[in-house]
Amino acid sequence: MSDRPDVMAVAETLALLYRIVPASVSEGPAGTATHNYLAEDREGRQWFVKAYPAGTLVAGERQALALGEWARRRGLPVPAVRRTVTGDVIASAGELTVSVTQYVTDARTAEGGLCGGRWAAVGDVVGCLHRALADHPGGPPRPVAAREVCDVPRAGRRLRDLLARWADAPPPTAGFAAWCARTAARRLADLPEVATKLQGLPGTLTAQVVHGDLASPNVLLRGEEVAALIDFGAPGPRSAACELGRIVLDPRTVLARPDDWIPGMAAAVDAYWAANPILPIDDLLAVPRIAVGYLACSVYPLSEPLHDPAAVTPALEAYGRARHEAAAVLWERLEEAEEVLRDTLR
Image 1: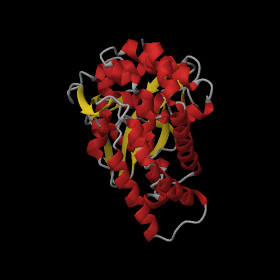
Image 2 (image 1 turned 90 degrees about the vertical axis):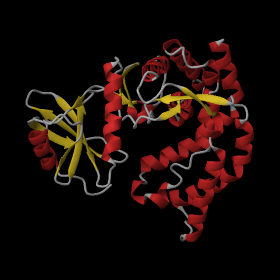
Image 3 (image 1 turned 180 degrees about the horizontal axis):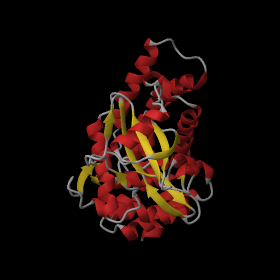
Image 4 (image 1 turned 30 degrees about the vertical axis):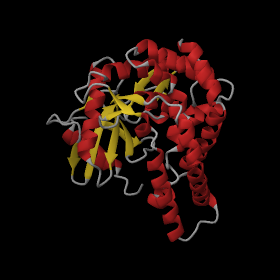
């Protein structure tokens, strides 16, 4: 991303619109679509400031922040949003648009992978979150066709479109772009086999309001406990089991824990079920198959070299390769994972 706002502009906005007089403002951890800052006020309180680039759909960001506030009011570990002097969750000053939340100290993201007691801790918190969000005004849980969760025809269309765009552009011969083009072609060729394997899913899965972006960077850990859930998406019905699988079978965890990811996943799903017994057990038993089906039907980040070349960083490249490698591991050990999960839940 370019056009990072100056820290002085951020400091002035905090003082003017949030009544936070900063003693210091510094650049914070990199965001996927935002510029982030850390601020400390004169009382020693720390704040996380997210600056949105031009063109951001602010209405959706407001809905996402409101969803986090809704979960926080129900006891979930979500950082408090700092409202502006006019009571808004997002402020604009000139070309600068920001939101401010409490900074979570002494915590790190789950990007390093789950291990030990973290499996059950994450499963429990996600279960509590989904149990609370089942009562969200966005709508009660409802059944949706499993093919809508792992949409093979849609994946085929997107991969064919991506390959057509690669064909129209100068063909990449090396580097991450070339790997993406080769992998997209391989992914398209594998889709018929993926469709066959996904026939093992239940006919319907349960959709409800969920976190919406429960990736490992958005789960903060402190020791073996979950310190916070951050960066919610705008509320909308999504598969609860798919969201659970996305975090407990994160590609980096699967690759880093070759001997532990199956029992760890089972422990996480078991803890989830204890916290959220209203989700049908068939949804929970399907978590490993949904997780690998989701990866197989995704074109991210294969599309990034074409759609957003500036977003291609060494970290994104490593993550893209990890997703592909982890999918192969998940397919190879899928039946074993499902058997262990059945034994755990039954």
